[in-house]
Every structure is written in C-alpha cells, then in structure tokens.
Amino acid sequence: MSTETVPSAAEPIGEVAAPPRRGALLVVLIALVVAAAAFLLLVVARPGTPGDTSPEAGFARDMAVHHAQAVEMAFAVRDASTDGPIRNLAYDIITTQSTQRGIFMGWLQQWGLDQASDRPPMAWMAGHGHGGPSTGAATGTQGVMPGMATPEEMDQLRAAKGRDAEILFLQLMIRHHEGGVDMARGAVRLSDRTEVRELAQHIVDGQTAEITLMKGFLQARGGQPLPSILTP
Image (cartoon, rainbow, N blue to C red; front, side):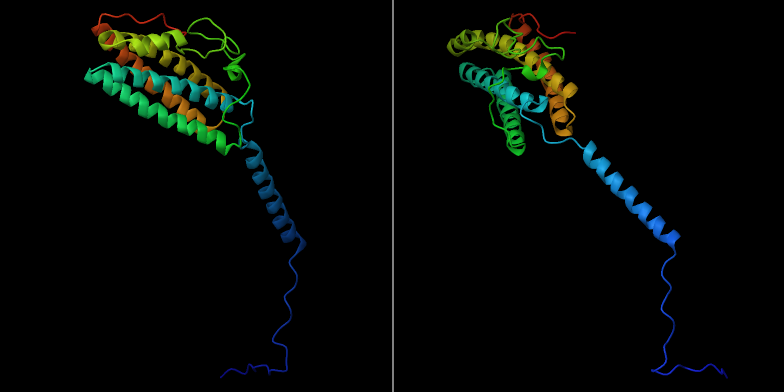
C-alpha cells in the first residue's frame, strides 16, 4: 500500500512552470524572422499588375484590334462563299478570336487599365526585334500592325464573291495570321505573366496550324500566298 499522500485543496498542487530558457526563445525568434523573410521574397518576386505602358497592356490592346479585323474578314467570306470548308474555317476564326478578344478586354479591366491608349500600335515591341512603333510589316506603311489588311483590301474583300472572295480571303488571312504570330511571339518573349504567355503561345500554335491549312486551300484554288512577313 502506497504511503503517498494526496494534497489538500488548500495546498498548492505544484510550483508554477519555469519560464522557457533564452535559447528556446531565440530559436523561435529566428524561425519567425526566416518565415517573414521568405514571405517578403515571395511577394517581391511575384509579378505586379501590368502598367499602362507594359508589354502585357500593349499586347492585349493591339491584339484585340488585330482580332477584330480578322473576325470582320471571316464574316465577309462566310457571306460571300458557299464552300463548306471555307465557311467552317471562317466560323472557327469568328468564334476563337472573338473569345480571345474578350479575354484581352477582361485583362485590361482586371488590371485597372483603359481599353484603348494614345500610344502608337506596336510601341510595346519597340527595341525587341520589331521595326518600332506604328510600323506596318504587311504594307510598309505607318500606323498599322503587322499583317493588317488596308482599307482598300477590306473593300475588295467585301465586294468579292465566290472563288474570288475565297482566294482573296485566304491571301489576306494568311498574312494576317503571320502578323498575329509575330505579335504573340513578342508577348511570349517580353511578358513574365503566366496567363499572358500561355495564351500568346496558344495563338502562335493555333494560327501557325491554320496558316498551313489555308495555304492548302489556296493552292487547291490556283492561288498563291502573298509574300510572307514572318522572319525565319
């Protein structure tokens, strides 16, 4: 039988625990400092919201305008042609590029930026392997983006019918896609935002495949593509 006695309620059950040793406190303090430093590094390294003159803003604005013309061209040939494959291609361009254009506009809204800017087209690529602000690679004129059709070419497309409309559309859209690929490659090089780089690469891949398809359509109709504006 144990002789150990049970303390009464009036007696203290035990001494108050001794405060932690200084070494333990120092370890905890160091751990907190390291954690705070790691958090700050993550925040600093994380890309911030693109500014008004950033490559991301320029790409979104310019590509939205570029896509809008492609959609207009696709509507024109869809109304002028009865050819199933051509009309299917036009439908794909209308739906795909309209959707992507909505994404560009959504980015700008999310970033708190205006949908349009007074900066010249392609200024965001100046000094990065492009001819500079407002250079039109398709025509050699100022104030247009690479691959864009001129107002005169758009009038010709709207007036054309049947096979003539198909050939002209294919010639203009091949060049238009080449300009889109050039711009998207620029965004892949210049942006550090995942969503921008991924969509830009998707445009490169998708429009490159459509260029090959359209060249086949053009050859089957006895037409020849316009001089390429893409550098090897």
